[in-house]
Image (cartoon, rainbow, N blue to C red):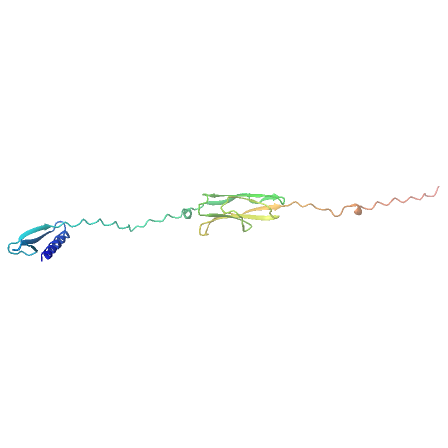
Length: 203
């Protein structure tokens, strides 16, 4: 019986701590004839009132909820670049180069400069020239005739952003005419010797 009384007292004490800091709980305490203490939440003859002030445990601060606003991903800078010009400034349009071993230097410029994720491609007669993102090319072993160079800038998805005007140039090879109508076998025949004039009658 004594154990049950003590257990009840402990439970009442623990319950009082679960109350808020401003709450109060009253219990009654008395001792019977055998010297055993009793606790009850109802008054009894000869019982003494005991006021227990409960202290609620300090609540842990609520963790801050993540902001509903997600951090925006940085925009692709190359997608924001708008090119005002792209041109081939060398060679000049309509220029001519002589000789089968002629070297044509192609130079380009853009405004602004090429963005990191964009691509600059150069084409000769519709065929891609090796060397992406290069502003200079040296062309050699070109066939005789007319050639055209163009350039284009693409974004990282392959969409065309700007294209240059085509530049046309000529490769001319001098030819040597081999004469076929001269030679010892084809010398003009010598003029015939004049015939002697017969003397006329004497007078």
